[in-house]
Length: 327
Ligand code: NAD
Image (cartoon, rainbow, N blue to C red; front, side, top):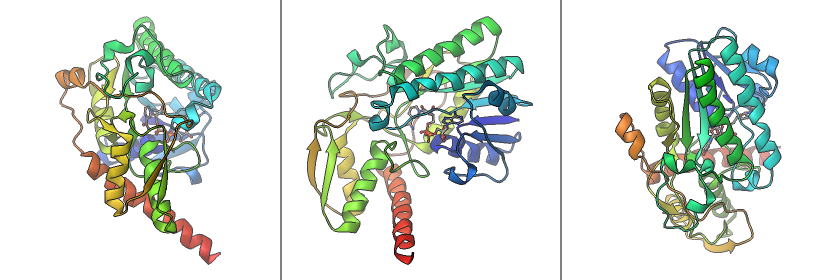
């Protein structure tokens, strides 16, 4: 039995689909949200609503399991993590209780989804940043709140391996995007937020867009299919150290907006909100280590991935509009 925690969310939902398709072992999908609110539900999986901050719920989730993917966390884009540091840090309960249950039940393999937010702020001060290598994590000065929790949880995985012999694998995800994720409500990340804003402008005819920060901040974005493949590969590998999992194609937020405008066939008047949360000035993934250790590299071009994401968000938004009109 393979358990996916956080299966009602964006990456977890896609991972469950991939594991069900592989068909090697039965899949159990777990999330705190009611199942009706999951982004994707696979009827072939055993779907459970559990609060994984609770130790007993973690034991229920992992009972009879051999492999565990922990993707459950209270998280969102910069707007959420900069304003909800305590909530982000409370996700430490999830990974702690899952590791304890994994150790208790002698789980074969445990995967933890860490983040590029563990990297120190002092390495990300300019838009033309040097890509982040795994060894750059220390001396530590991660994103306050969310990043500290991720770095602590990574280390907890490491010590459960060293002290209890639990096999753990860790990926540091760099900005993952794609369909079936959050695009409104305050937890969305830049690619989905920009798609939504461009679609709102297109549908309303008000051809304006507000961009958080000055638009010159840089990031790399990994399409969900590349993320799922990398996650499965890292889980199956014998690599004990945390690995970057991200794209190394660096773009500015302005360039990301250019891409979405081209997909939508509109040109918008841009305004820049310099007091909005914008995160570090620049961040990129150095993929040298992962490419030296395994056969993985991001395959989906940003333009292609954004097109699929845009189409999905457009469908969701126009569906909502039709429902609102017919009420
Ligand atoms: P998401 O918010 O879509 O999914 C996380 C899921 O965890 C949600 O469905 C949420 O309900 C669930 N969850 C939260 N608290 C829970 C609890 N107490 N018990 C059970 N489930 C709970 O986020 P995502 O984008 O799919 O991210 C998955 C993982 O990858 C997270 O750990 C996140 O920190 C990490 N990550 C994501 C990105 C990204 O760009 N999406 C980047 C870096 C790291």
